[in-house]
Length: 121
Image 1 (cartoon, rainbow, N blue to C red):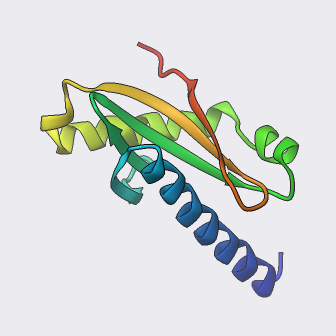
Image 2 (cartoon, rainbow, N blue to C red):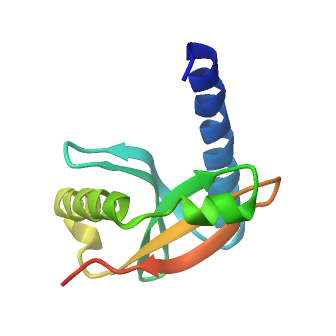
């Protein structure tokens, strides 16, 4: 992958996350964090609506099929570990229901997939 290809992918990712944030806001979510980085992993978006705390993985691809297939279990393990750290660092969210969502971006309007994965208990 060339430097220019990486730059284009980075710009595409930023634009996709921006659209995902607005899609969530229009659905009534409050955005608590973007690109939340921990030593265990990164969460693209942390959002809250009512008593639900959603950890959202954003995938931008050329089409929805590719975006869907880009979701895989190992990355959700990292997101779950980072989510546990988020709740530990923000204990006032400990009583919320935790949910792992995906936001697929292929074209202008993102597709929100709530509760696509569950952390092992």
